[in-house]
Length: 253
Image (cartoon, rainbow, N blue to C red; front, side):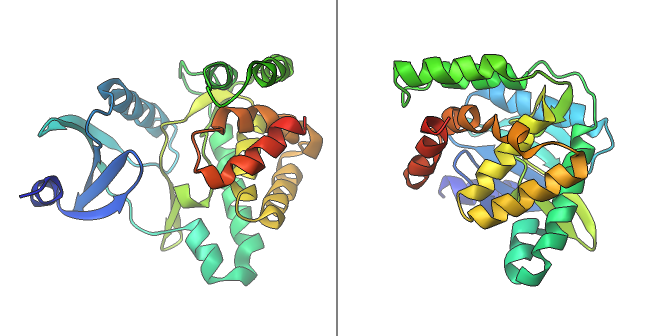
């Protein structure tokens, strides 16, 4: 019996798979099984973030237990059902503006929360840039200088807030995948969302940004100040097909 069959027998059907983990589910329980060798401290950290965020009342999965099963780390949590907002947009292109309004509203509600997390957005960006082997010394120096000029903040930042991480069922929404959460400027978090959408459709990214700025009162240029450092932090961690877009953001600063 292979590993997938073992986990399926214990936790239920395979319902999703990503770069770092596979998700199995049975009934109302889901178990995220991480790839072999995945650091256990990161699993405990993700569980802790989920527990902290749950206290805000935001619609998020509940973390129940960290496990080690057949030598692989796993996280047991409440199961989330529904289709992602990105799937809903693709299925109903005429409703894209309306769906983006929902996304922006959920993002602003998230950013309005004040909770105790040790991770700070600016510090995370600095560390990712400084340790990025894809960046030469000159680019690192430039990006770190830009990062030093960016404001700190006290908002809860999801770190990867886009439609694939928001599920909808029967009009109820759930925000998933909190491993990149930190405390910082809401504009830095919005810039990450803009960059995520710009990989696939720059027009959609611009529509998102206009809606975020209209709802929050932020200025477009203040959000985009974060673009080079967000891109620098992501270079090498994304599929190679996105490298050109990332380098444009880095060198265009």
